[in-house]
Length: 130
Image (cartoon, rainbow, N blue to C red):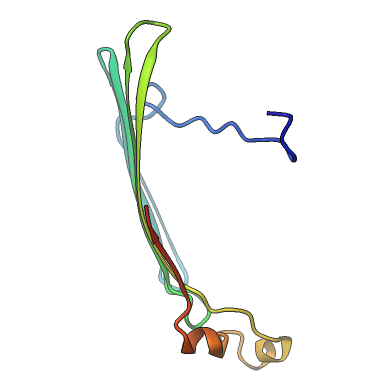
């Protein structure tokens, strides 16, 4: 709420009540950039669901900057009464990112695609699974 420094964001997840029964989205671009999402939501009696599966990948402009991630987000709800609802959320994430690191202004002018040599040598990455 307003008592937090900088305010807060009230993120409201999609549910079967406000989602399309089927939705497909895709994007593509430079440096092998690909992003796609498939989602679905529906109400079935007193229950509803929403599920979204997405993929993102790119080789990146700079050396040692490849990224990829796959995400599954889903929730299932059940209305016990008009005023009482139970909802279960599931999130699965696999993210892989190589980190090119910072370079000097001179290095940018010489070759803007280069990565920091130390990051390449130590194979710096940020990878996580949830």
